[in-house]
Length: 302
Ligand code: SF4
Image (cartoon, rainbow, N blue to C red; front, side, top):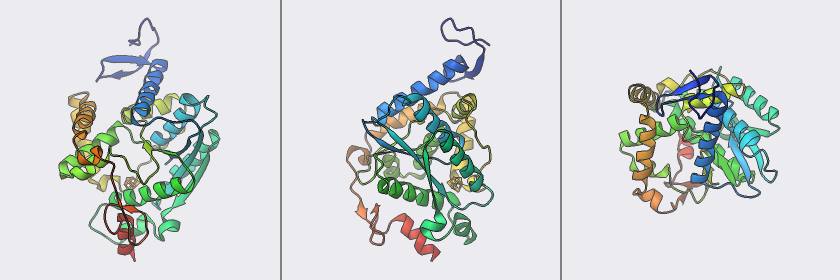
């Protein structure tokens, strides 16, 4: 098939069922980068002199995003400074491979990459948490502790913006999980401002996971296809399969869900007012309750 754009005669590398377009490589790359720029403008403007921390796992999403920001979208912005923060949760046979890739990508892009581990920051690895046999899925602990490291280290290192590589699939999964759990508070927090933390941006929020992978492939970014051994144990994994099936039968479902959420979220209390958080009585970090989730996990482990 030929590309559907104007008089372009290039062969298409993708058929977007949700838009009905066939796109060649240059037009596909341009379309992804346009979406990323638009998403960034919508969420938060990058300002003169920003020091931008990018959460880098070494997977396809964060590697492609870092490349796109540094080499394409902001390639002529000498006033901006990028650095990467990577987290080693301590997942045997998985994380060390992706971290090697993260270091490689950062080196190729001439960006400093700082790696922080659960073992060093909290005194235990995710594998050790899992070995305790708690009721919650590993991702629940992992998400809390990773977020803590990213928030604290970004602030300590003087970042003025934090960029994460959540794509459209990640975002709609999170929205649906919160709907299904009836967790309206958390649903609002997805959009709400977080006064105590460095402002966050999710530039890939409007790009399908498959398209991020194709972008990374087309741009020649080294990616790993290795998966976390704990991913399938999470509720997210069930929701992900469900959404993929819906998208397969009804192309555009994920976009509709995201657009619907954007409208509904205007009425959620956490979005209407800047959230005022408490301070955790144990560590002093911002928290929704007296004891923050990270300290709860540390308490459980001790
Ligand atoms: Fe952590 Fe779950 Fe992601 Fe594995 S899949 S790295 S446990 S959040």
